[in-house]
Image (cartoon, rainbow, N blue to C red; front, side, top):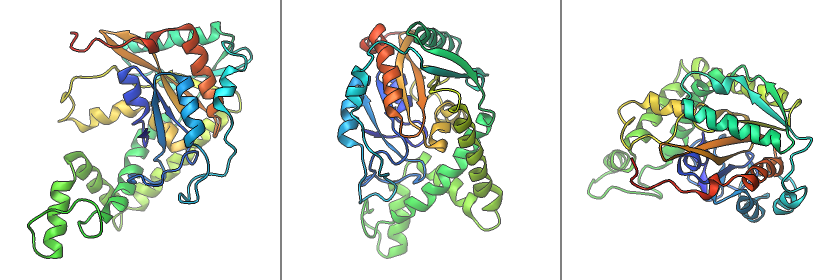
Amino acid sequence: LGTDTGGSVRQPAALCGVTGLKPTYGRVSRYGLVAFASSLDQIGTFTHDAYDAALLMEVIAGEDRLDSTSQSVEVPSYSGLLKENEGSLRGLRVGIPAEFWGEGLQAEVGEAVRAAIHELRRLGAELQEVTLPHTEYALAAYYIIAPAEASANLARYDGMKYGYRAAGPVGSIETMMATRDFGFGAEVKRRIMLGTYALSAGYYDAYYKKAQQVRTLVARDYAQAFERVDVIAGPTTPTVAFPIGEKVDDPLAMYLNDVYTVPANLAGIPGVSVPCGFTGGLPIGLQILGKHFDEGTVLKVAHAYQGVTDWHKRRPGVGDG
């Protein structure tokens, strides 16, 4: 299990060559989770394939009175859905968004994902172009909303009631400062400061409120696209895995890797990443997005694709290159 707030299940799944599912917001209880961004966080799964994800979802999905965001929506037999019309996507409409093929997409990633989409067509799916015009603003909106909510959520970790407490300091102020200094990493501190600034007096309307308005537009784009198609397909990440430490000193470059995943969190829709190729010995991910609470169709597409390909059975060579 993992937490997908802006892609943190689907992206590592794509970069490691496994299947990563982010369910609909509210489909799986978050009780016990350390909240980062409460309106975005969703528990997801890492599995070998889509069928395993279906089995796991049958266990963890459903309403939980201990989580006020969990929804009272019937949980189907996902594994049963995958067995129906197994291997065929006849009649299913797959949307291809032009906005997912822009600048920054590694050529080899784009080629592998296009080949995977054509495989879906060979399985009987109908391909349609769709437009998600506010995609270019999604990343900016996310990196205001998520840090703002993180700032509020992580304020409770002051070394007093629970969690880590720094040893040594005497007095509440000194303990709080030392706890947050040593307990939070550099990136967490960066996001807390960004969020605190966005929520501060005089800036709330200019940043957080405006970002929420953009979020509404992003969600509306997906709702309109899903009036025409059943799922949307594209890359999970713009590149394959990069060397450890390569982007540590350039947070913006790191954030840009989220460009294809954060819109689903803003819209609250489900999505899955499945392996669809390799380049330079590193895995490539195909992302399939679906309608609210329609994980069954998302998994059906992933399962059908994995039934005629073996990318999910291959492993990157450790230490190659």
